[in-house]
Amino acid sequence: MPFMGEVSTDDKMQVTFRADASNQGSSALATGFVPDGVHPPAPTEFDMVAPGAVETQHTRIRPAFGVKITVDVPAGGSGFLEVFVNDELRDRGKVGDTVWTYGIV
Amino acid sequence: MRTRTLAPARPRPRWVAPALVAVGVLLPGSGAEAQSGGRDAECIQQYNAAVRDNVNFRPLSTANPANGCRRVAVAVTSDWGTRELFGTAVDPRDVAATRDQTTASPGEIAAPIEPVEAAGGSVAAVGTDRGAGAVAAIAINPSIFFVSPSNTEAVARWSRLSDVTLLVPVSDMDEGEGDAAGGDGQAVDYVGVRWGLNVTGLRRGSVLHRAVVAAYNRFLGAGTPQILRIQSLLSTLPTESLEPCIRILAETQSLDEDAVGRITQTCGGAPVAADPTVVAGLREAIQAARIQADSRYLGLDLRADFGDLSLAGVDTVTGTALFAGIGWGQRFMRQTDATGGVRTHLGVRYWDVEGSEDTHVAVEGGLGFETIRYYSYQRLAMAGGLDFQHRTDAATSGGDRTSIGLTGTLNVPVTPTSSVTLNFVAPVRGERRGPVLSIKANWRLLWSQSF
Image (cartoon, rainbow over all chains, first blue to last red; front, side, top):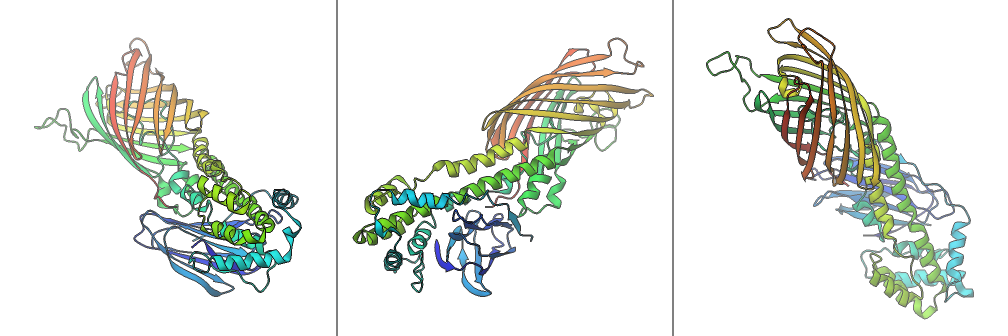
């Protein structure tokens, strides 16, 4: 699902990915901002998640066009992705290779 | 698990965004309504209508229509190019060290001190003037035990530092005389240990990681002009064209030629052309960074050999040999996936002969030239050169103390994790280092594939 709705500047975003233990290798979890060309580019959170492991990223939403959460799993792999905004569950689901994009307002 | 923050790309100057919008406004179809709040509300309304039945899109809030056309642009371009990015992005095996052989060939001079990236092994059939045998080698990079594959920076740094190799014979572990079976009663007739320490490993690994991260950030930044361009198109379209334009944009998943044509026809202008060099640039950056990281080495080469020293290419005697030396190598990039280079080493060897009071000390060195063609995680490599050994002892040397050999190595990849190596040492001057010919099957363990 490419577009997951919108979040606001200064929101707290927590992204959690649980990689399936049966995955044939580590998965990638990246949360990055699409720069708006005006504000300084925000840093990208980038982690790799071993099979069976859990990774959590905490991001404060910066002024930008959007924020992308990308999960890339090994071939045939999967995991469970959850996104909390301001400590409230926003989205969750079993995913393979996926990109969730939130617009920033 | 530690979360790492990547350094952002250099900030874009403040004039860039307005300039890009201005470019869009000046294109055909622009008008006074371009930046109107009414058009923003209209963009959101048409977008929500267009994606109402599309499970891939969430609707936009209509409570505040500010920047509506830009928000629609963010939504409809959200998936363009991103999958390509992470399909080629940082994998631990992309940033780990790579080398052509799992272990140095028996008798190989000026063998590069580049550690195996995780672990590996080889079996070499070795022919010497004392006969033929087979030597198995197991190499371990100690970093495999303490570096998490989730930390690609650590993988890039520590996989280049050091490895330890154990060599044992496997053809006939007890050749020679001494018992009924023809052996001497010992478990094995040869054991060798190698320890390589690449002192340039950590620094060059860090350079590699920064280069890959920089390419990654460049890719992220490439989405900005696309969003501004789509915003510009939506802001300047005639009202009747807005709904079909947004619908065609929402249906587009990647900017192939057909998609660009449909968008141009429907929206009155083309999106920013998908630049294949952005994705390719990231892929090449990873490859180039890896080559750069592996382009130079300087380190210690420590070896100990016990038993039939001819299997180690040392001498045609049985005994104990110790070697301490330094190795240096430099590669020169000819193109992205091919290099030429020079490698050399210099060291001192001490050995004693079994059943004799004789001990020997020699200075050894070698100079080789190599050419390498890179394939996925492998190298097709040819190397040739000269090595010398000059004995400082006079006890048994008799005549000429200096021997010179001609060496050659050819490594051919078979799969991404295996290769075959042919190596020879031919005496040019002196007879103490007999001819050595080996053919070796290499196997390597890569870091776990992810991403």
